[in-house]
Image 1 (cartoon, helix red, strand yellow):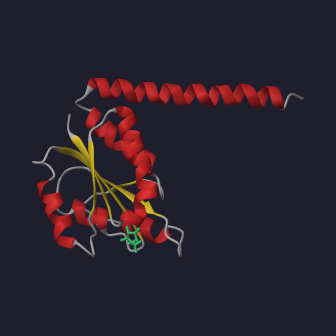
Image 2 (image 1 turned 30 degrees about the horizontal axis):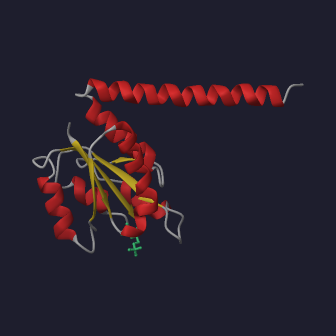
Image 3 (image 1 turned 180 degrees about the vertical axis):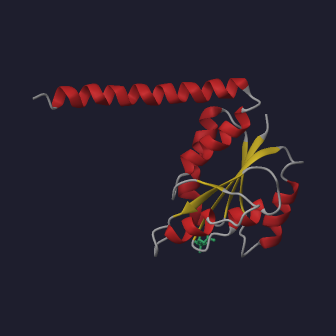
Amino acid sequence: MKKVGIIMGSDSDLPVVEKAADTLRALGVPFEAHVFSAHRTPEEARSFALNAAENGFGALIAAAGKAAHLAGAIAANTVLPVIGIPIKSSTLDGLDALLSTVQMPSGIPVATVAIDGAQNAALLAAQIIAVSEPELARKLRDMRAQASAKVLEKDKMVFEKLRG
Ligand code: RP5
């Protein structure tokens, strides 16, 4: 199976990014995580992206906060699908990172998830890998079915609790 690459701009992004790792682990999707910054280590970020396809990656997740150029910088150097996670920072609540990540110029797409949306980033990466992995697609369907069952249980509970 192809791997998912998770790149974050700083280890301070870890508390959010760990949720993506947990989700990929639960699905049995192989992944590798790195700290590469578009600004502080631009050469390493570029080299990782340039070599990612031949190194066995099938999708990349890039998480960064503030002036979040990481996902775009990675996407500029590979045609692998790149998923951006805007990380919430202390000052502008992640709106800065959201706009920096989502507003890509035509020609270089980044699939941007919600601010701190690490779980969806992992699910989207897994869905991309699952296009050629039927067993993984089955696991994704099972995961959704379990999530639906949980909501229906809550529906029953709320219905009973708030009976008129
Ligand atoms: C971004 O700047 C990182 O992705 C992080 O979200 C933010 C702050 O980084 P640190 O100053 O905590 O290393 O590049």
